[in-house]
Length: 267
Ligand code: 2AM
Ligand code: CA
Image (tube, rainbow, N blue to C red; front, top):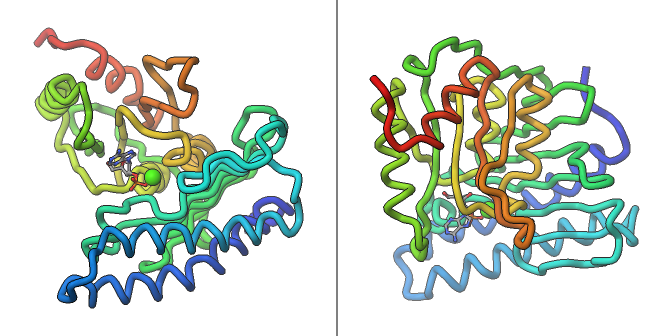
């Protein structure tokens, strides 16, 4: 079985088209590391190019839909019913350094709920997709979150703090606390792929502060449809784009939440 509603088909097609250009850009960036051109500028243009293709493709069928993107901001802001949430390159730092751990991430939101989403790593050719009520898939295979029962045996992935974070100490102390209470913590540099890996059972859980909604929109539905739990904490309704997230299989979710919310863990 494979998902084939109009929305998921549209996203899939747009991501595949955008990925061709992104793969070319990635080939160039490896050359750029030995050239004199500033890599930062190149990433910006790769981001913009990828985003432009995604927007053009998605707008062909639904020019009236709202779009929330990393590079262009809001399009059709008054449409609150139907929205595409786009991150053209999630894992920009990896992309910039020639590390093939980045993805195109596109979610579709209806009435403020994510209904479907696609995360595509164009280099490994892994496409994660999900639609509400229809399960989650990696390419053509159904995926599920892990069945790990205990937090102390779990592999947990995280990210941050970002360079300009004002809460670095808090994030580092959470990192220590979680590390001391799980099997191991990983840091891979792409929120979208971190979530895709939780959905496919490679990691048991994920948490991260100071994300933007486009980093995680597609991941939310993919994890939920893979049987996992997704929660936001310390949500500020004045900044709805900013998110702190915890996502994991259902067995360890409460324990992971406790590790993040409590500074001192009773042994
Ligand atoms: P990005 O690559 O699209 O910037 C890295 O831990 C993850 O956090 C990436 O998914 C990255 O998305 C995201 N992130 C969001 N805001 C960030 C920031 N200001 N600095 C670094 N990473 C950020
Ligand atoms: Ca991102």
